[in-house]
Image (cartoon, rainbow, N blue to C red; front, side, top):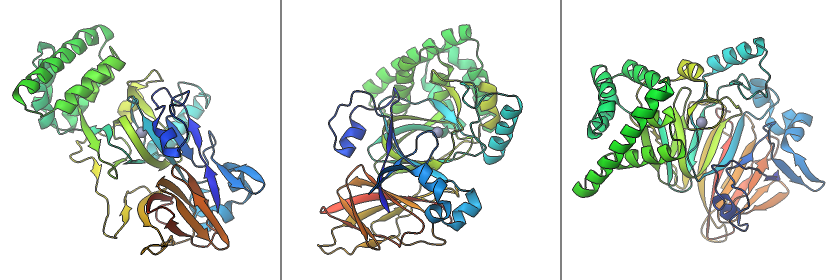
Length: 415
Ligand SMILES: [Zn+2]
């Protein structure tokens, strides 16, 4: 068991304050901090803090896969950590994207290898042969677009937008209010020639402004977040078809502790907020716009799931006091949130036992200060910090050193 130093990733959409404040370091930072990775991704592994200095988690796993990961994980996933867990802080919207299923990823990876597209080429879609299910749990209020809204509601939203340019598309969806209608509409928008887009998009955004003014006058708040998001995206990405496509998606605001699970084919974009995110250890992203990065529309259309998603927010399991489980179908990861109380008060230390075979865990502290004891080793992890617990470590006990504390425990699912 070791303290685990995450690696900060600086992307333009990141925040100069959120992750710094979480770790208790001076803010604002010089560069925006978008993500803090705790994992063994070859692109940016975290580091174990050991008496001999910092050791890359990737190298540590390479030199003792069975000890660190456990035999069950190695048998199932090979000698690699199957998940990556992060802090994420979005100040600006991220790209509109979806991730492939396992079959699509295997096929796409093979196809791009056969075509000789270098792994580091900017046009490469499939960086590996794995799917990339994602689970995001809000630490602050967290805004996102996730999955297609029911077509009937979208027709209602369009009905409130008084724009001639939108009318044919509204009729198109009203005539076929199902996944096929969504596919047809999305496909025609995402492939619209720039000239057509340059007339439709400003007209739709003007209609959004007028609809917001009407909402202001009448006090009817229906679709106000959707309209504001469209305008905001239109400002960040003028002339981008992704702004229109965003009008088809569920606009979600998560409260702290609430979560979204993004399965293969779910079109999504994170908009703003701080979160813990866990995903299968993959880099397979297909973008549909709202980004200066590579966009491959035909490939995106191959993987997208157009089935409307009625309630994108994950129903967490809160049946145990102080524990929130976020059940997902993804076998590569599991995430649990735990409220700890001080062992010196009336609280007992919380034992982190395995459900099945021994597997590694990463404990992220998001509030307070926590003591973690395993065998002879005792560590103290501060807010914003993390602890690596190898499969071979004795089951650790956690307790708060502050009045209360909160951690997330990331592990491998179904082990
Ligand atoms: Zn994603």
